[in-house]
Amino acid sequence: MNEITCECGHVNPEGTVLCESCGKPVEKNQHIDGNDQKELLNMRYDGSARRSKTYNRTIIDKIWNFFSSVKVGVWLIFLTVIASAVGTILPQEMYIPQNVDPSTHYRDQYGMFGQIYYQLGFHDLFSSWWYMLLIAMIGISIIIASIDRFFPLYKTLKRQKPKRHELFMKKQRIFGETVRDDIDTELFKQNLKKRRYKVTEENGHLLAEKNRFARWGPYVNHIGLIVFLLGALLRFVPALYVDDFIWVREGETALINGTDGQFYIKNEAFTLETYDKDNPEDARFKEALENQEGAIPKTFRTDAVIYERTNQGVTGAEPELKELKEGAATMNNPLKFDDYALYQASYQLDEFKEMSFKIHDKDDDETNYGEFTVDLTAPASEYKVGDYRVEIANYFPDYEMENGEPVSASKYPRNPAFVFHVYPPGEAEPETSFLGIGANIDAGGDNQYKLGLTAFDVRDVTGLTVKKDHTLWLIALGGAIFMIGVIQGMYWNHRRIWLQPREDGVWVSGHTNKNWYALRMEIDKAIDGTNIESPKDQYEMKS
Image 1 (cartoon, helix red, strand yellow):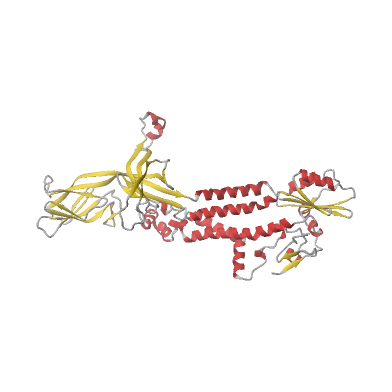
Image 2 (image 1 turned 30 degrees about the horizontal axis):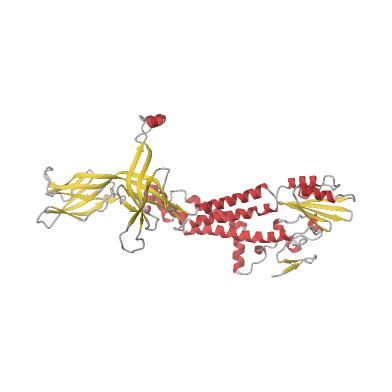
């Protein structure tokens, strides 16, 4: 590393713009010469040597310089904002119905655009590797840009001295000369201390400084952003964040998704309450209710029991469950257990549970050769009915027609339909029938027997969102740190005032990172009664 030795004797690292000790400009870096009295000093980062402005030799230097660039950081943020906007054009996969296939849902709901949207992976954009890479690159850019600027600036401000080079004084934006011999510098120093300046003195040279902490506001912002981004990235670690969904039927015990097989839930009962305009409690909504068609849900609740598996980790073993908690999940009050919370999110009323059929003569509905019941959640492949044998050749839980062919829109029994093979006594060839709600079709047209629906049983289904979040405190902490940095940099500013004694009077100069008018007002108040002339704003004079 090359070093730069100033005329004051201080050795500065390569890339220094202003000497760390006396503040003299390094001519080749400041792009001025000693006779140029027009250009003001570039006081950004106090002229400290930044790595990104000094080294560009190795691949590490090039990577460092790339991520330390503010332009690169702005572009990364811009691309992330655009990508985030694209992710909001259509609902993300987590917000579409849980019982549909995403590959067909986007095509069916949004046409060709939806199909392209799905094929490009935008349906799960916020979990995609390239979106995570953008977030990570923003974090890397913030960290490198902060390190590249913070440590050199901290080092320079820590080493600054009251005695500064005369070129440093004359090229400050606020500068003034006073030629007289009755100047009261002691009063000037006392006035500055009254205004909460920290004053240091060296052979008659003064440095008054206050609010240096305001310079660190942007870096506190960066720390807050890094903590915030870290919290957001940790949401993709299943041990720290879960956002899942389950459907549980009344009376059913089901594994709670996202709990790694540890917890189960039993739906004891689902209750739906609707608004009633004749109910005195709902009378205030009477006018609105009269303008609505159908029942309007008021609240819905799932009474449930939470179980914990005690033999977790035993491969192939039936789960052994121990009751952990009993409670209810309502619209705004989740059922909490361990680190999880179950939120009441949706419901399905009157889903088919079982259907019972009888075998009778095709031309006589009164005959009955036997009955059988199909469990629609887990139907058997074959049923023995007296001397008859019935096979389920095909089962459509949520039957609909597509391109002239029967298909199932979902795996849930909302509109069940069957293709049955009925084997009469002593017959090797079956009779085929198609049977569904409102449909009973003789597939061959010459069947002797017919299947008839005799009874059915329904049950309600509750939809619960499963939540676990160990990152929320980290995201909140990042936001709080960010706001501290905003306040720190917005409501305070770093101010410095130098006084240099001359043979025929004094020079006074000042610098602040913002609010130059307030600095001039403070200097004017500090020189009151000292016979020091008010310094001028050289930027205004130049313009």
